[in-house]
Length: 129
Image 1 (tube, rainbow, N blue to C red):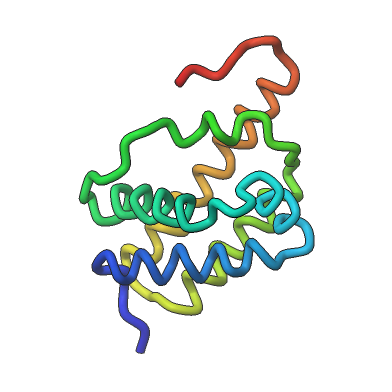
Image 2 (cartoon, rainbow, N blue to C red):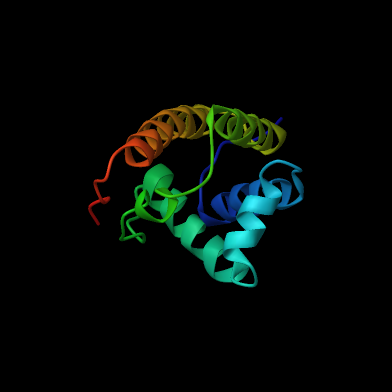
């Protein structure tokens, strides 16, 4: 039986497994690899801190998660693939209330990010840090 997301090691497994899939995905890989380039260790560490803060309520992430994504060349299709990979990674490794919360939070984040990206694409406003 799979365990829930309980500690930092679980968060690391989730983040690293998920981004391994992202990096090799034919739709998302070129975008992520093109932007992140050789800074993957820094990005993964930041994502671990983000999800550690969100899921474990251990506040190690401080920042504005949307701003770096504001100008990405993405559409609903990109977020659909992102969510498919997110859910499949969680289901592959975990089961329980925190796993369900991670899926729910990913769903909500995708809707919010796409909405904001579309807004900034169609308006001259600048994202607030």
